[in-house]
Amino acid sequence: MTSDERSETTKGGALGRLVGKAKAVAGAALANDELKREGNLQQAASEAEVAAEREEASADQRTREAQVDEARAEAEAERDRLQADLEAERRTMDMERNRRQAEATVDADAARAESHIRRDEQAKQAIADAAERDARRERADARTAAAGLEREAARAERVADMIDPEEN
Image 1 (spheres, rainbow, N blue to C red):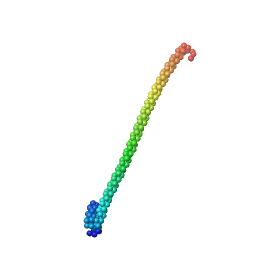
Image 2: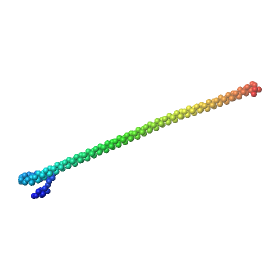
Image 3: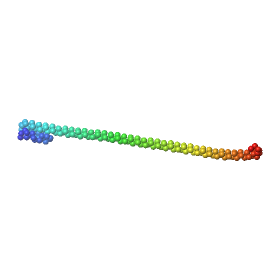
């Protein structure tokens, strides 16, 4: 078996390490330094490959963990953003509710004020109507009294004409 043929044998992984160990033991037993050296090299290469695979797996694990951490941070940021959006929406709804309540209060106050004004106007109109009725009654009473006085004055004149007919 030439050295090129021997290098084509299994090199990597646990099987490569086992084959390397077997070659090193066989080389030591047969006093074949080249076979022993090849076995040691194959064993070292296999161990390095296993270590590299472990390191790659560890790096992959760290990458996955970093991706999970990043996804977690993104999810937390999205949760915070959504929570802020909900809080802003709640504040907007509160402000709208407060605005509607304030408008309702203003409308109710305006309706009460308008009602008071109408009652005051009605009361003033009732007073004015009563005063006008009283004034008409007083004018009618005054006309009646004036007519009575005129009748009495006419009667008094007739009586005076009867008493002294020449003065007229």
